[in-house]
Image 1 (cartoon, one colour):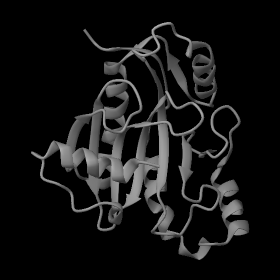
Image 2 (image 1 turned 45 degrees about the vertical axis):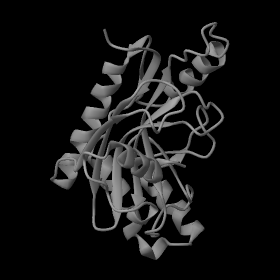
Image 3 (image 1 turned 60 degrees about the horizontal axis):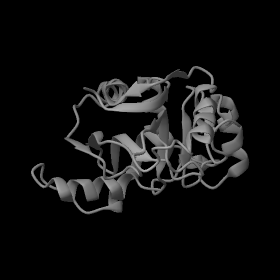
Length: 224
């Protein structure tokens, strides 16, 4: 029987959204220029959202973006970038009385109210895996390559079940589609995200059989 979850909100990841994220470091003419960066965000249809996290922007493709410099994300190859296309409220076995339920459902209401997002209550891990698989197909289509590593792990979440992480690498960056604990004020929620981070955040990619080392590598490249 699929593992139950309280709620899932999502907006499918698209190939153009992946392409936009991966091109952010290339706009070197905007590096450090906040005024020009603001103008570029406006041109792209990026804007602030008010229902989820203050440090996130909504991209023109409708996903939630955050990075080391979320309001000036262009032109720096050393920045980390995060694109959230799903949000999950997992079942917390330490909160059997659902004391966190009211405010976490309210937080999920915020994610579901983002333009183009939809919600499912209750949901299952299988529902999340379908969202992650669809996102992985978008990354594969853009890069023209299947994931280099795949690992089912709960090492990057605060609470809740293990889900699939998929890893690609360019010459300079790691791309990971998978779950990650929401480090914001909600804490108990889980992002479904595409992270785009410099390879130098961790050692060389471990061999497939070393799952413990691969889990540590993932955490180094997706943690915020």
